[in-house]
Image (tube, rainbow, N blue to C red; front, side, top):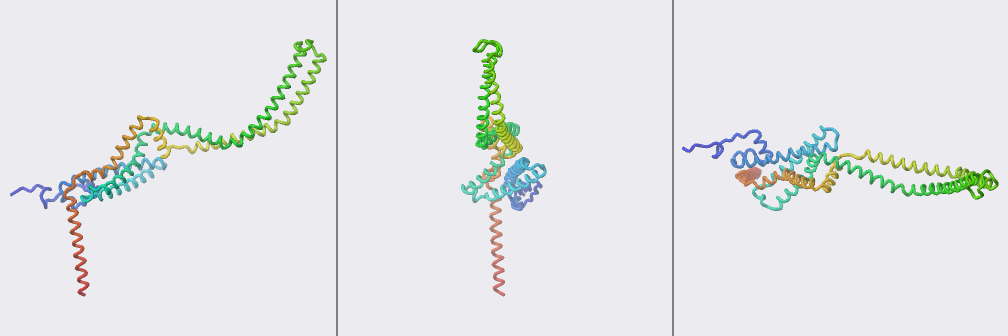
Length: 340
């Protein structure tokens, strides 16, 4: 008599471990049917491993993403686990829809690939931020300095219409004082030159011409004092207004600097700038994006590429049997009602 080998011939029992059953669940295989499909047990376990890897990666990626927007670690972990569960549900739905009948059809497979690609592309961002963390923070420092300069330039542009009239008025008043001060200085030098003999008369001492020049000098000095008394309040008022505007600009600049941060969007912008300015980083960035994208696409790829075994036939026949049984049951119930 031929010796039966366990797990190969029909009717033999197979005791799967808990982890293997868990992998089957991840791959959306029905335990009662997969146990009867010897070769498909390993295939669906492989698919389950890809789903498990994607699930863990999604949980870690989302946890890191939320750590950039919330301060509590436990909240980031809880949100990461929740979003990881959402991604798990989507992946299971994607591979559940791939079967013998549609795995070679372009439209359903293409839709699943596009959906997985979209999810994977977003999930790749937190992972890349973590991998390039040091370089990104260096770029953030550079970007923030640029933002400060742009903010200051915009403030100067906004207040230019207010400052220009004040600056023009102050400069005009100061120009008047400077012009009068030059006249006073010239008169003083002429008077001194006349008294020391180096002037026009060549006479040393306070002679008639020297006295006349002294009187002219003193008059100009008095005129300057009067002009200064009349103009300085306006100059001080203009200086005060300009100082208040500068103080307001400084206050706004300080408030703006407190808003600068290293949040998720700021890091994404820094990463983009880093890629644009550094070809070595750009090459590794796109390489990592491709690798991380494959992690999300692997469940769909594995389910599509792995050959179809007897599990799908078991599932098809089981579904047909249940449909036929339900129809017979309904027909019998209808006949019983008619007989009554």
